[in-house]
Structures are given as structure tokens and as C-alpha cells.
Length: 327
Ligand code: GLV
Image (cartoon, rainbow, N blue to C red):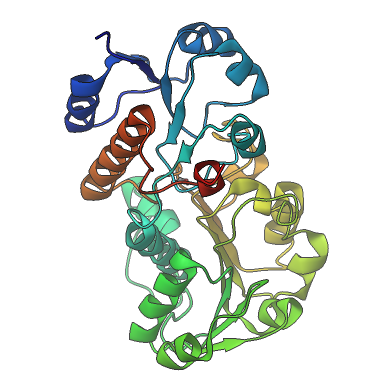
């Protein structure tokens, strides 16, 4: 029997590729950069399965160009690059990798929070550049993290883990989400539900943990930044477009808020001459919140397992559109 064909749009952990190779003829895009659109369409034209990244648009055009496609497997928890409605209409299961990266991403969000609070990047750069001359009582002062109020926007899996980390630093946590957590979560983690604008006004640190949807695009714009404290630190390890970057630049430059620490931006990467990169009070990391060895290995394996299940016609363990199995 001929093996099904799969296209993997970037190198992932070899262990996961070996698992896939037992089931399918696997082609891996070898370059560091994503396949250009024409290459992506060409490479997927005859495949039964695709293992995709956030940077690959898996849309109706691609699905049309790949008539044999039976399964899509994304190595990420977010999947806004995939037209899930279109996949569902065609009965194509879409896999993703939730849970694997929850704690690792929360670790990074907390790291960004602390780094911005204590100006770690700016001060370490000063040392490297030979600008640090002596210990001085008034130099390089930042903000205390312990005891400060943390506002969390989006209290899903990662938001909850962020709240757990805040507990260790005696931080009161106030949160907003479209769906309020059950009372037992609120009690266990000492998190207080509040209207969106109250979270913006009350928090010393604001961490974003929402999905990117049409409703959350530019959730943080000029009006929201104006509501924040002049010392507020804004952390984004969710998705870049959740923040209006022009408004953020102005707010950081004019001292409307204290600092920002971003793992994600719009676009990615930011061009090297982007104004945000000129600011000492803005940290920008290269979308690495899930980038620990253990987590990226687990994500690779989960994505391979989802794809294998899809190819076998079995239920994917982590499926974005399980309704395809009801049809
Ligand atoms: C990364 O950003 C992911 O969605 O997993």
C-alpha cells in the first residue's frame, strides 16, 4: 500500500519527524524562512496532510489546491493563520498543541514583566556598552514586582498560570475576560473579576492572554492606554495585533505608561527601524514564549500525533474543530 504524503512547513524535532515517517512520505521545508506562497501551494498540491506553523496561511485557496488533503496539524496553540471554518466545511480536522506550552508561556510572560519592572535589558546593555560607571543610589531604579497589582486580560489556561506565578510574589490579581471563571478558581487563586476598564485603571502590571480574534484586534489602543497608570507596565505574550503599536509608541514616549514588554508584535519581526525599537522602556523578544527545549519537543510530538491520527481517520487528541467528527 502506498504511504500517504505529508508536507511539514519547517524543521521540527527529529523524533516527531521519525514518528511521521513511519506512517507517511514526509517532505520538510528545509529553509529557516517560511515557504513563499507559491512554494507552499506547490508543495501541498498532492499531499494528504500538512503540518503548519503560524506563518503559513492555510486557507481555502490552499485547500482547493490540495484535493487529497485529509488533515491539518498546527504546531502552536494559536491558529489564526488557518481558515478553520473552511476546513470544517470540507470535513478536514485541524489539530493544535494546547496545554503543552501553557506553563512555559506563563513563565515567559512573568519574565517579561520582571525584566520590564527592573529595566533588565536596558541596564544589561549599559554594562556591555561600558556605560555603567559605579553603584549609585539613584541610578537604574525600577519598580517592585512583589505586592504590586497584576491585571490579567484573558483568564484562559495561560492567564491562570500567570495568576499562580503572581501568588508567589504576593501580587493581588484583578482580571477580565468575556467569560468569568468559576468561583472556585477565583477563590483558589485569589483572583478578582472586574470590568475591563477597572483592570486597566487599577493595575500596576497588565498582562495580555487573549486569543487574537476580530474582537481582540487592537483591544489595547489609545483610549485604553490613557486609562492605565503612568507607571503601568504592559506585557504581551499573546498576539501582536492585540495592541495598536502606533498608540503604544506614543504612550511609551510621552510617559502615559511606564514600560512595555512584548514577545509578539505586528508585524513579526518588527522592521529594524521600527520606532518601538528605539525606546529604552520597551523590551521586544522574538516570539519565544514557548521556546524551551522540553516544550518545543512536546509540541513537535503532539503535532505529529495529531497529524498521524488525521491520516488514519482517527480522532485527533487535540482538535480545533471536533465537529468534523460528528458529521
Ligand atoms: C505560539 O505563539 C503559539 O500559538 O503556540
